[in-house]
Length: 234
Image 1: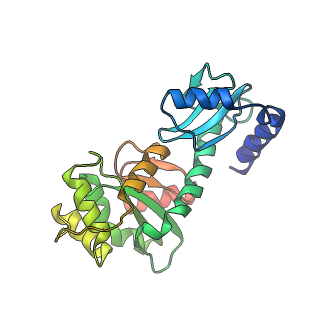
Image 2: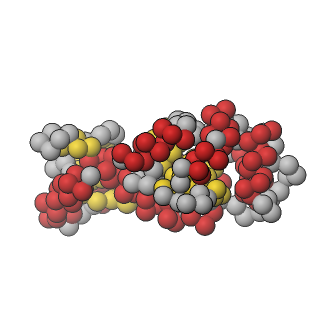
Image 3: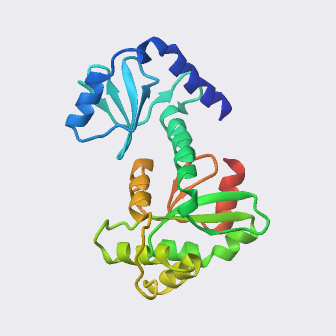
């Protein structure tokens, strides 16, 4: 992992002169496509910028004429996935910005922290929640972010807003996972929309989606023992 990160940094440094060039053409092309760039940096590909957008990580040429979506691998260094390494770093940074709005089920003897994009209408999300004691017993703290798959305006979205606005969000989440309802309808200044947008930028397309401690995104449900193995070998 450290070696691959070093390769990524070296690629960026080798393009330092490119980084100093005018980015206006690339930015104009992104705006035309409706892809606001929150971050723009040299890519590990000559003549391209690496761009963080609401749709994830993209690559755009300096002249704005070419747009790439996909993974870049370092063939000469163990096929290191440079795109996923960059996304892992991004996920870790962005998650720290929303920690205060997560619903957390802490392990008493915490060894790992896993962030889960969840939806109360998702069967495997309910299965994961039912296994909460198993995760916690293995030293895994679970933190929830909202990702109602149907989008804004759906009943799941409204129920998840009620969960996050409840006096006891953790209790409301457990009730909502069991019944599909958070209990009494609640409203407040909540972060459900921010969580949903963050999931899109991370590459989340379904739930549950697990972000491990190193920023790796794991789609789908893993039972407690398999998640522990994944964390031990990441």
